Amino acid sequence: MSHFQITGGVPLRGEVRCSGSKNAALPIMAASILASEPVRLEGTPRLADVRTQTRLLKHLGVNVSQVEEGMIFETVDPAPIRAPQRLVRRMRAGFCVLGPLLARRGKAVVPLPGGCNIGHRPVDLHLKGLAALGADLRLQHGYVVATARRLTGTTIDLSGPNGPTVTGTANVLSAAVLARGVTIIRNAAVEPEIVDLERFLAALGARIEGVGTSTLRIEGVEQLGGATHRLIPDRIEAATLLIAAAVTGGSATVAGVVPAHLDAVLEKLRQAGAAIEVGVECISISAGRRLRAVDVAARPYPGFPTDLQAQWTALAAVADGASRVEDRVFPGRFMHVAELNRLGAKITCGNGAAMVGGVRRLSGARVAAHDLRAGAALLLAGLAAEGRTTVDRIHHIDRGYQRLDDKLQQLGARIERVENQPWNSTIPKPVAASFSEASRLASGHASRMASSR
Ligand code: UD1
Image (tube, rainbow, N blue to C red; front, side, top):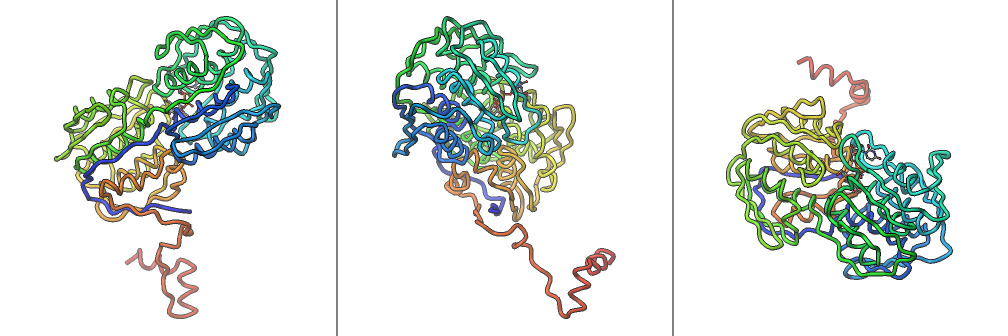
């Protein structure tokens, strides 16, 4: 029921620190099931998906405690192997418990996942990989039932029609670390979040060669220990904040980042005319004048991330000139376009791309977030728009950003979170003068009369 109210047109200025990575935290939390000793994760972001993953792990017999720097996970035996549908349906990364449960406990019952509304999201590659390791897999009443006395190493290719799979790599890798013998994963995802998982597993005692590359050689071990691991910073959050500064013609510094993770994005921002300065752990952006339109195609890492495609489309909507924003990872991920057009953008889409004609100014309106990154794009557009923008369905944004509104406020944005109000309570109600006037209003007669004037 909560929504954001934004008064646009204020150039953002100042410095803000980014949180730990959501997409690193979720599969690493799932992989803590593999550890025989406690795991301490530092830098876990405080956001809804992490809370959902925590509830899922508790349900699966993992003791989870919050500490100042992050979280501690400790698996207890004997432990349940059935993941509840209500949690996995809410968040796709819940499916990442499949590989660890199967490898550690010999059986897993995990529902087919839900998650963001960004188009067709199969899990065939996850299942193909686990089957190749010797798992018996059946689909029963919407659940994947996987069993294996002990998994056995083999060679697996994880490339799909749109590139490698990120959480599929997490699932298969997390299973292979306890398999008998050697597993070779070809076309593994190389996203920084997967590399973080590889480092975490290595810290637990897994034997992985080729960390950070698309070919992994894993020598299975009997048992893994515990570890303390600090998560990488959230590159998507960092870039969202940089684009927020750019779209308002402001200048800002985002601290606590790994700049190399954002090479493709920084290159596009430079091409668009923003001044970028890169420090050891920070990035500064300055966009004093209107940015130029630049074509972008989202691809697997190290390409431009699909998780920033919507935010870039918001930037392109107010850039000088026309551009094409393509998504080769999720070609149907353009739910934000209709909402951006409500704010006055000129965007058409088809064939996995948006054709954006930049306008000088957007104008504030009431819009709704349909998925996580689409929601972020609407906030950015609202910051650039003239007047007031209301963004509804912000639970999508809270799933994946740790208080994005607070961070934007730190940069001077005029954004307010309005809690627990019915969706229509901010729409002024017509004041009826009499009973007959009231029934005329209720029947829609008055609005027909008004529009015919
Ligand atoms: C992860 C990220 C998500 C990001 C996406 C792409 C997490 C928790 N989520 O999602 O934020 O947008 O990577 O960077 O880390 N595919 C198949 N078969 C499969 C699996 C995927 O064909 O079994 C296809 C998908 O439809 C898509 C492409 O592969 O076209 C990439 O999807 P994938 O990398 O699996 O995305 P997720 O891991 O779900």
